[in-house]
Length: 83
Image (cartoon, rainbow, N blue to C red; front, side, top):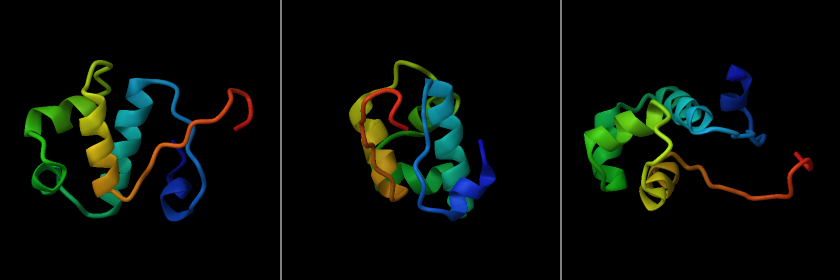
């Protein structure tokens, strides 16, 4: 992942659960937040955060949205190939 993304407002293309997990970890760390910081704010458990950041493909979608919200991120869906 391009570290420059963290300093910009550009979009990030996510193709796998691992991509999402790596992105979430990098953004969290760039905001100097720990996994423990996310737990209470996103109303989730430590195991979930670990699994999300490790790219587990079967994490609960609403919890993913909660974590993204805490990190100030959102999901935007567009037609394939228009990125």
